[in-house]
Image 1 (cartoon, one colour):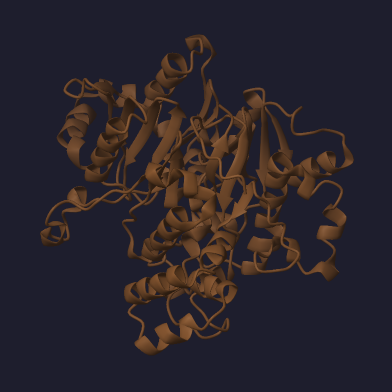
Image 2 (image 1 turned 90 degrees about the vertical axis):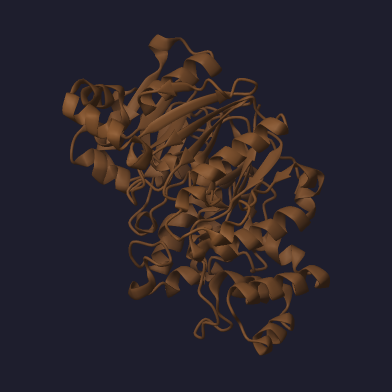
Length: 479
C-alpha cells in the first residue's frame, strides 16, 4: 500500500478507495433489531455478495488496479474457487493496495500485541462483555479476531455482541479533505464500534503513518454528559455522508439526522484553523429518515453536472417562497426542520452568504469554484423530476452516486426514471455485466469511457439504505 492520500474533488479520477465487503454480520440482522441497527429490512447475504457487491469490486479493480483482474474474470468466478478472490481472510483474496479492504487493515494492526490488547479492552467495554470473554478474545489470532469484531460472533452461530452491518458504508467512518482525515463521531449507538475500529486503523496502520498529524477528531462539548436527551443539536455527532469536498478550498457540511449543528461548527473551525480549506458551506436539511445525509439528496457527476432530488430545486423552492402561507410556515419552522444554507469564508465569519435552494448552491459551486460557464451547468433530477418516482427512487439512492472519474458514475439499476433522465442529458447508460464484458474483451477501456451511468444490481443492497457514494471512502483522487 503506497499510503498516499489526497482528495480535493468529488469527480476527479479515483485512484485509491477504502471499502468493506459485506461480512456475515449482515446475515444476522433480525427483523426485531433491523431499525435499531439502522436497516429498513433484512437482507439475503449470498445475493448481496455474489450477485451485487462482487460486481462493485470487479469494476473498482478495473478502474483502480486493472492488473489484479484483467483476463482473470472467468477463473476468479469459477464455482470451484468459492469466491476466494473476494474474501479478505482467504489466501486468494485480491489484496489490492488501491481497492483497500478495511478488514485487511484491521487484521494488520491486530498483529501488534499492544494494539490488540487495547482494542479488545475497548470493544469489550463498549459492548459490556465479561472479563472472561475479554481474555478469550485475546487468545484469538488476528484474522479471526478481526472477523469477530465485524460480525460479533465466534463461530457464525453464537453472537457475543451485535454485528456492525453498517460498516459497508465506509464513507461514514471518515472523510479525506485534501491531505487531512476527518474522523466521524456517530450519532447512533449501533455505529460506535465502527468509529472505534476506524480510529485505531487511521492512527496505527502504516499506510496512514505519514498523516497522523493530519487527523482531525471532534470532541464533545464541555459538560456534554449533563445535556438532556432532547438536546441533539448541542451534541457533537458527524458522519462522512454529510461531508463533500467540492474543490481544494471548499467543503460542504450537512446538518442532518446524523450530523449536529455543533459538530458542523466545530468542523469548520478546525478546518479553518489548520488552513485545510478557506470556504465552508453548512447545509441544514430536514431531519427525516428519508434524507439521513446530504449525499442522499445530491451528488456530483461532473464539474458542471449534479443529480438532485427535485424537492430542493430552484423551481420547487421558488414556488414555496412565492406562496405567502408556505413562506410564513417555512420561516416559522426554519430553525427546526427546514432547509437552510450558509456559506462561510475564513476571515469573514460574521457575514455568511445564504442560498435559498440546493440547486442554487450546486450551480454556484460549478461556476464560482470550478470555473464552469453558468449556461453549461446541468441538474439531473431523481426520478426525472416526476412524482411519485422522484421520492421513490431517492429512497433507493438515485442521488447517491459514486464518480470513479469525471462523468462516469455508479448507481442502482432499479432507478429507471433517473436512468432515463441521464439518457436525456446525453449520458450512456450501461449495465455493469455488459461493461465488464466489454472491458475484459478489450472493446473498451476505462480511459475511453465518458459520460456514463453504470447500472449496478441492487435488489438487496438497496434495502440497506445506502448507495455507492456511501459504500466508498476515497483516499486518493487526481488533483
